[in-house]
Image (cartoon, rainbow, N blue to C red; front, side, top):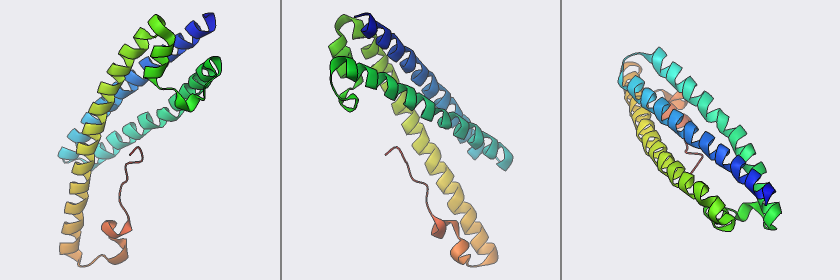
Length: 158
């Protein structure tokens, strides 16, 4: 029982970190959106770099989450891949109520981040198309170096 409480506290701390990361991501996405609407390419680069740094922190958080889920799965005799925050809260009983509340908070923040990220992505693609069209009008066909030919941004989370 003590081991379960320890793991639940670790999970709660992890969830707090994830919620805080989502808040930071939301703020950085809003900054990115503002920069894209401005006229300063250096600011866009700065904001993009800051956002990339924040997103790289997700790797360490994912590793920590996997360690906690593996330990909980081992404790309950189930594969870690089958555990969800809801199932953990249900298995933990009254001890899992905070996990369930935090799940809702994380879900809300994540949905806001996804929505804003899509908006910022659409804005960035609009800018890219506009500048490609301007360059094409000024210099003619760009051929294989045209950004539209070279590739597209892909949502790796989808």
